[in-house]
Amino acid sequence: MAREKLGREAAEAALTGLDGWVLAKDAGSISRTFTFKNFSEAFAFMTRVALAAEKMDHHPEWSNVYKTVDVTLNTHDVGGLSVLDIEMAKKMNRYFGG
Image 1 (cartoon, rainbow, N blue to C red):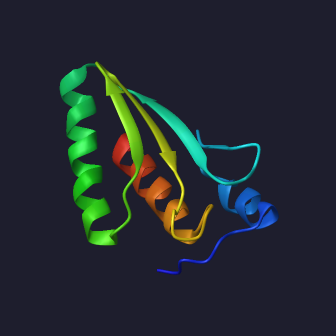
Image 2: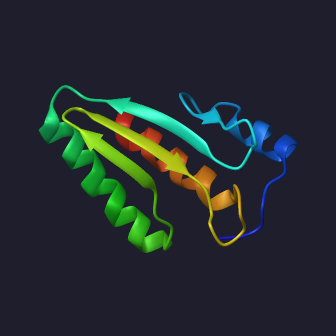
């Protein structure tokens, strides 16, 4: 996938229909909090995302406390958002909902 930085307009357009994700004020990252029923569900989600992240060679910044997973996505190589972040966010939303 492309590792080119998205401008603010492209980032805002990419977030259309991407429920729950918020664009940072500087448009350099997106973030979301996922809340599960319990720790096991949160950890299962993180495991599934980790496997996808390895395949994509694109890894989230995240933290987990009990049933909550906080995620921030950006592409360090480009100093901001890229298509990789949008694709990872879409995968996370699918895994959360499915």
